[in-house]
Length: 115
Image (cartoon, rainbow, N blue to C red; front, side):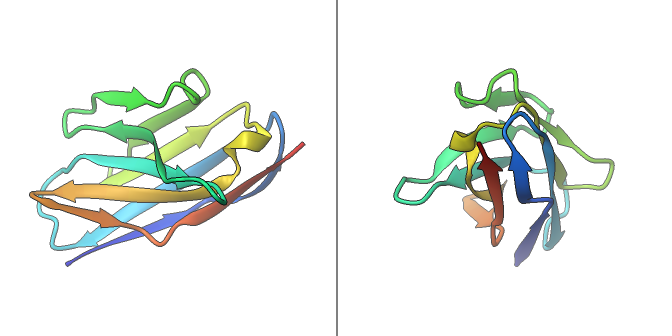
C-alpha cells in the first residue's frame, strides 16, 4: 500500500504564493510519475500539473507560467510552487502517484485565495 501526505495549503490573498508538498511512503521502491489535481466546489477534479520519472512536466493551461511542479531530493516527494494566485485557484488540491496500474491519492489540502 502507498500513502500520500500533502501539506502547505492555506489562505492567501490574490497575487500571493503558496508551496504545496507531498510525500509518499509505503510500497514504492523507485521513482514514480506524480502529479497535482484540484477540485473546486461544484466542479470536476482537474489536472493541475504532473511530472514524469524523468522530470518531464506538463501543466494545465490555466496555471502555465504561474505554477511549478518539481521533485524533492527524497524519493517520491513532489512540490507545487504556486505564484500569482487568483481567486479561481481556490480548491482542494490532491497529490497523486502512479504505480503500475494503480493511482494513489492523498487526502487533499485546501487552498483558498481571497480577492
